[in-house]
Length: 567
Image 1 (cartoon, one colour):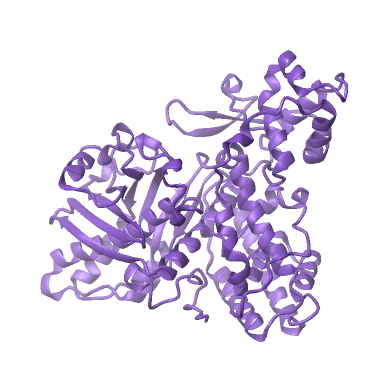
Image 2: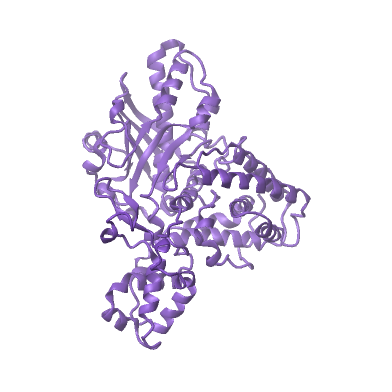
């Protein structure tokens, strides 16, 4: 990449009315601002080092290991407990009580006393308790078929077939990675001021990164114990192809509704990055070469993407066709003068589907880390004062905000069954958010406030008889049931990307759009929906392992067919 460029953007960020529709949010792709890539870039840039001071696991696969990450200023330690889990106890549900492995991220280096305390609590997960010394708690289960296959192959002195490995893509899948005060762990505020934690979810991403190393080491350890001297060592290429699996369901979907300022900051950073690149008047030969190379690798990635879900199959077919169309256009277009990226984006908006448009938006950022990567530090949210209602706002001003940000909702007939067919609630049995059918199940009394559009329309109707100069404080004294919606509207007035501009309780809602949006910011790829309500992903697939960070590309690893080296 060339010298630093002026990050000022002459082209404005995209209109929230365009960006914040669920069909588009559910078509986002990983990018330079995805949390996994933010982490691996920093680890290489700051030359983090890693150690494994403890690996005490017996022939039954029971014991513990410690993986230490040494940053320039401090050490973080993943403490992993390995268990001999009977098959009948293996479950990915939140309410499970046992797992193949359980983990915590410890702030510093744990003492023997810490390990004994953690041994008594971490395997219990929700039934256990941790302290502010612990930053996250997680658990994972084996993909049993692939695990047994790979252990047997290596124990027999053979390398596993890469095609068999690729069918699953991971040896373990996490069933939860908890942070931010869960089970007594440290609150976000404890680490928010640390540079390495400035971007969101960095501790959780580090936990998954180290868990992947532990899983590789544990599998090799079990093969060594089974095969003895004849055991083969897993090839680095096959090891690198594997990530950590995850199944994400409805529990994650409400997050982006319940955290409007944080969600705004994620979207705003990505939109500012896109605007900065579209504002560039020219592009260098090196920049366009990197872009076209990664476009070709994205075509390859789309070809490798598999799903059995009808909606995703249709989206994949369209994406593949559109990427072929985009490639043909790029091969004949001038990408070096007259605002080439804006012209390319404008062409795509008129010729490609939403999925390919968002893939292009991510790809355009790749040559320009020097002008967009700084936005990573703007993606967190620590300003709690944004949640305080401003009672001095006039009714007239609030009406204007509602008419602008919720115009899509004000004309909806919210009494029509198709527009309020669903209701979000928390299952007492499963302890997870659920989406039920309002007119088929007795769930309305338990509904969670996850329908901002309907609530905004109700607020706008309630304001109809109030004078424009009236203070909103007086309205709320008379109508306190609208407090939460007034708060959201005031947030949106300052944070235009805070609100999904679509119906979250309609009969045509696809929760997987909400899941994919959030997971794309994590850095997930090859989303594989198993219904309209949960999706499988793989994290850190093809990423370097700790010992490889300084010798391999630590940024562009999501793109298949090897790394692209940049200067």
